[in-house]
Each structure stands twice: as C-alpha cells, then as structure tokens.
Length: 126
Image 1: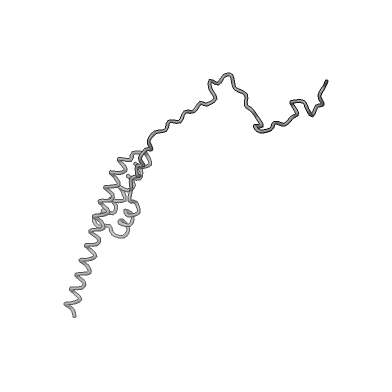
Image 2: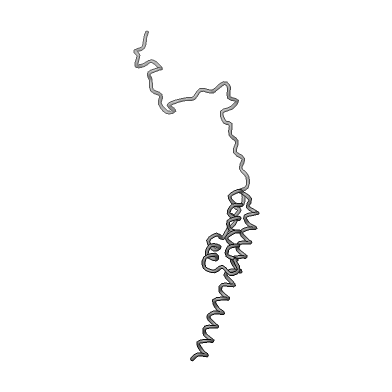
C-alpha cells in the first residue's frame, strides 16, 4: 500500500531535536578541545609612566631641566610598556617619578623662599 506524499519520511517535520548531525567518519572524536583548570594567575599591575605629572613639571616648573628629563623617562617607560618589557618600563617609570619629586620639591622650596623674602622685605619697608 502506497502512502500519500505528505506522510512519507522526507516530508514529515521533526519534533524535539530538529536536526541530528551525522558522525564524520574522518574525525576521531566528537570533542576535540580540552580545558585545563588551574589556579588563577595573579594580576600584575601595569607599570606607571607618570606622563601627566612629567608634562606638568615641564610646563609649570622646570628647574635645571629636571622636568624635561622626567618627560624623557616617562616616554621611554611608555615605549617599553608598548613593547612588552614591563621591567624596563617599571625602571624608567621610577626614574621619571624621582625626577618629578625633585622638580616639585625644588619648585615648592623656591616658591616658599620667594614668599618669605617678600614678607621680610615688606616688613622692613613698613
């Protein structure tokens, strides 16, 4: 007895899993990837280059060209970070920070000495 075309297996929609994939005879197994779970790696902070501080030291106070040296080492630190040499970037960043601290200290000492000198001269004049 022949079935009508609407009941033949080619025309009946599947229910549940619509498509079943056939196994590829050339593949060794269905799952090829292996996940290895280990301890989480510690997060290493990126080295700081202090570029903004260095630019401010260069623009607002540059005693003995220390602000320019700070900018130079900040740029070298940024370049080392881009290349992937984190230890070199850290060393150049520390050097830039030292130059920035010395620049800021000299700037503050200079401003204080000017204010004190101005105050003494003002007291003597009046």
